[in-house]
Length: 196
Image 1 (tube, rainbow, N blue to C red):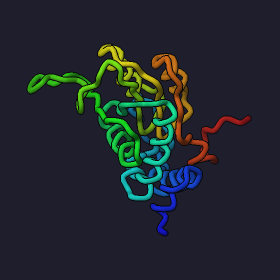
Image 2 (image 1 turned 180 degrees about the vertical axis):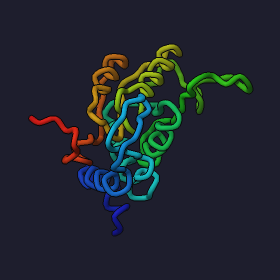
Image 3 (image 1 turned 90 degrees about the vertical axis):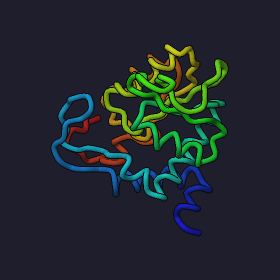
Image 4 (image 1 turned 60 degrees about the vertical axis):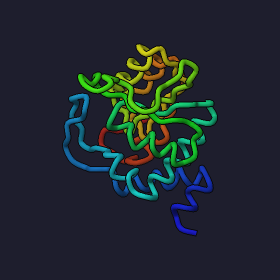
């Protein structure tokens, strides 16, 4: 059995595989400017790991399990960070539809802000994101769903940088927030890690 199939059969192995994939392919050491505008000495480009077969499969297993636990019926978030995450949930077996939230409504076509299958009023939405720092992208998706009258039953990130975004997300969503991994899993010896 190959590593992709093994990860797909066991959530504990899927978590271990996801951490390995993020550490091997997504962690970039060096000065960068984050989406929030903050400067950091490292960057986690999760898409470099989750858009590989092993990372995608492991992510799908973990997402499908959490979506099922929350009885989620729709999975998505702000494009582009959420796009592969939502697709991985479906590929992992989540019995849900996917959606993408645009930064703003299109000025042409159907002029929708939330793309994909139409969300029903009774849908239980799970908001997803690849990497959370301040949570600004996730908060924008939550705001769009709230404006559309949708129920949010939970929020999942692939990785939380542990910079305070999680608390803001949970408060805005009025629902639980679960990071599948944190920066402590991926880069435990980073220079900015707080002692204790």
